[in-house]
Image 1 (cartoon, rainbow, N blue to C red):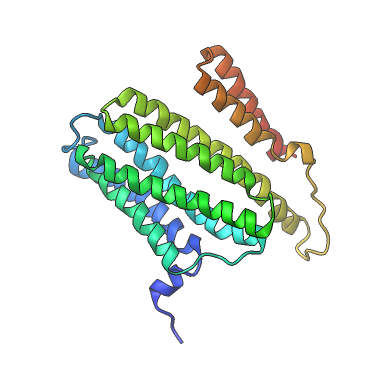
Image 2: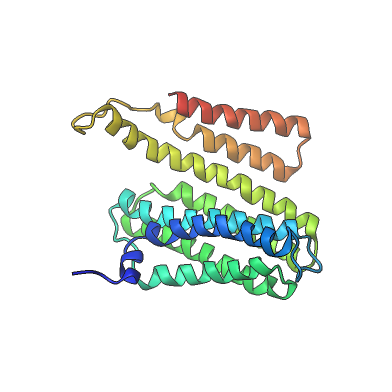
Length: 255
């Protein structure tokens, strides 16, 4: 029996959102270059670069985040996975914002903002519900980082609404940096089981056991560096904080 494509795609989050992330990351820049030579003819108050950054961060990276969390969280918490209609609603909200970003029309800033904040809010509610129902703290860190990302998205969109391109670019930069923290968390959880399978394909033993105090070192240092950015530390201090965060990632990989 052959299942309909829509049912196959909506069986797990990664089946929809990983392809969407790849397609959007490839097609949107191609359309911007091919159709409008990096310009956006409908953008008036905001520079095209702000729209471009928004689409890469909350478009391609956002879809990857949705696909990853909706697939990994059920595995980590032994909870039922999202499938079917909730995933299609998420894809619809994400896609509505991306269509607005493709044109860069000033009139579409508010609808795009509401769509992006809606799917981010859904992720927050999903992580909180799973944490409470399963009485687990395994996804609490992700909950905090997604909350910070939602705040940065809201402030960036607010700046876009009032036509402040410089402020929007600043908050988009913070949002991009927050994805580093999410990457650190994901690596801390994914690399351990993968490395153990590589070292022992039989899965009878777990030869790789990372130091507990260093598992979340990289995202912790990223959080410190982001806090420094928001607080407005000097470039020299900020540079040292980011060097430390980079060292945290290198330490995690070397271990």
